[in-house]
Each structure stands twice: as C-alpha cells, then as structure tokens.
Image (tube, rainbow, N blue to C red; front, side):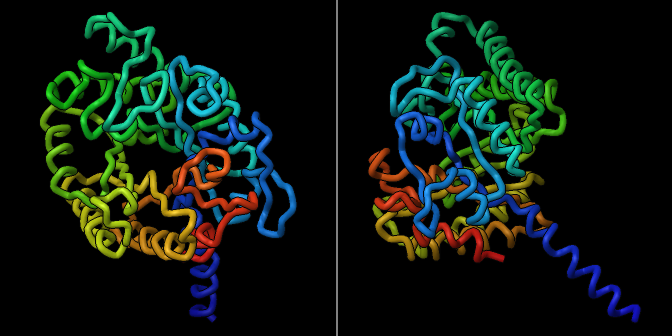
Length: 336
C-alpha cells in the first residue's frame, strides 16, 4: 500500500514538472498581424485567437520584445511599452508565462545593428546609464501596475557585439557591463522575482560564449540566466540541424557548469517549407535543454511561429499559407 501511495504521488507530480519547462513563442508581430486583419485558423481550419491556438499546441510561455519609441510602421513598428503591457496581460490571463525582451532601441537590435534610441543620441555615458535604468524601470513598473510579473526579462537582444553602440560595444567591456547592470538593477527594483537573461546568438558556438561570458564575469555584469539563439538555417550554409545540435547541447551544459547559471534557448526556428525537419529539430533542441544537469535547462522559445510568410515574408515561421500552424508546432505537444 505504501509503495502504491508513493507511485501515485510521483505520477501526480509529473505534470507539474513538465509544466515547469518553458515551451514558448515569441509573438512580437502578433499585434501588427491582428491590426492588418490577418486571420488565424486552428488545426481544424476554424478561425480562432492566435494565443488560444498556441496554447492548444502546448505553448505555455510568450516572449515580447519592447522598443523605446517605435514607429507605427507595418513591419518595424509597434512593440511600445503600452502594447507590450497589453499583450503580456492578455497572455497572462490565458495562463501563460511571460518573458520581456528589452532591445534598447527604437527598432530591431541584433549583432548587425544596436542603434541607440533617437531620444538618447548625443547623451554622454553617465546619462546613457540613467536612460537605460529609467526606460527599464518604466516598462517594468507599467507591467507591475497591470498585475503582470514577467518570469524572465532580457537585458539586450543578441548582444554578441554589445548594445547601444558605440558606448556599449564589446570593444569597451567596462562600459557594456555598466549598461547591463543598470538594466539588471531596474528590473530587480520593480520586479525582484524576475530572472534577468543575457542573450547571444549562435548557441552552438561554445568558444564565443566562453569569451563573452568570461568578459561579463571579469567586468562584474550581473544576470541570472544565459539565453541562446539557435537557427541551423543561418549557420554557415549548413541548414541540417544534425550538424550542430550536439554542439548546442555541449554549449548548454558548459555554460551551466562554467558559470553556475540556468540556460534557455530563447530563439529557435526552422524552414516553413520543411515542417517535418523543423519538427524533428524542435524535439532535439528540447531534449538537449532538458538534459542539462540539475534542471538548469529552463525551456525553448520559437521565434515568431505565427509569423506566416504570406504576411511577414519570413521563411522560418511555423505557419502555413492556409493560415494554420504546420506540423512543426506539434513538437511542443509531443516532447516529454
């Protein structure tokens, strides 16, 4: 009887453990898609709210980018503070967890472009530090007033070469670390429970991650989680994920062990025309993250799965021309 009781208790605990793993979607385009009239359909072909479709596919987390003073351009606008808060609240009401991604720009920030917001141009470095803190605290406070507590908050997006150029370039690590720490301090001041993520691209490149995070440690940058992008399609013309998936796994394990941090794949994507391959890749990525020792692998987030090519011209979504999710998205339901 005692053994049966223990078995039942263990079985009852399994769903909670599974739910603890973040299965996510970055949905920064969703407000624009809705504003332009894009119609989402579920797997049965019935019109339905995109968030509900994603939830039914096993998605339990949304990631939202936020810009400082964005335009209202169809493709590169939106993502203001108020729009971010509204979308975060909408997702939370559906039982989803929230990640906020600060770009510290008026538009896209990535290794090719880390343009400072127009309102910050001409500010000296001490003022830029204040700008980062004030903007971060403002958005986090607005979320708090709305009743939203983000589980994770990114300070910068794909900051392999730094952020807020030129002052925050990796050519000047002491300054970059100070900018990061202003973001970290503002997050914690408004939302102490939120975990701060630092995020680099090319998650299979262990040497680059070691170099970057060694510099972060040497310069006192503060953070809680190491985030990675993983896009086999963009890796040196080698779209077959099987050529790099083991490197991703080794890097995840090494980052957790070397720095004592939790790790996540915060961006992943595959070709929309190869849904079975993308499905297989997503299963493999989730396995690698789950295999990180001591449960330090927190989850996997698909970047704009709903961003159908017919609307966005983006070739790595997981949505078909018929307005429905592709087979690829079943990988979140099918993974253990």
